[in-house]
Length: 90
Image 1 (cartoon, rainbow, N blue to C red):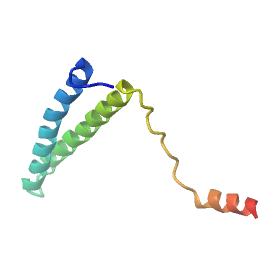
Image 2 (image 1 turned 120 degrees about the horizontal axis):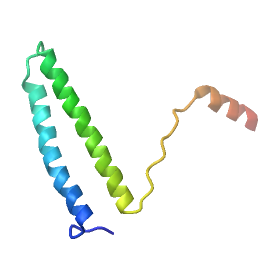
Image 3 (image 1 turned 45 degrees about the horizontal axis):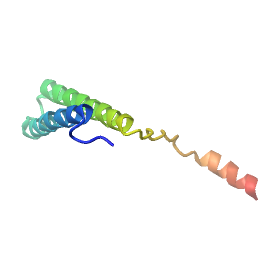
Image 4 (image 1 turned 135 degrees about the vertical axis):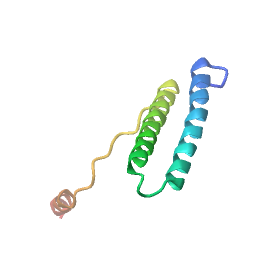
């Protein structure tokens, strides 16, 4: 298991703090911007999307470093498939 003494763990920890500060600042900007300022709102949305991407990448790196398998993407439930599967059982 990684600890803060491990280089990879330190790097991930050191990256999360500035990302959290940027995320807070982007949320604050979103709150104080005038509704008509669409150009700036689009830029804030882009910042937030990139922050989510960076956070996801750090989560993936953490899972890899800890030897944990990534969660499997689940396919949305289909009522038609559920009904046909239930019908097959009866």
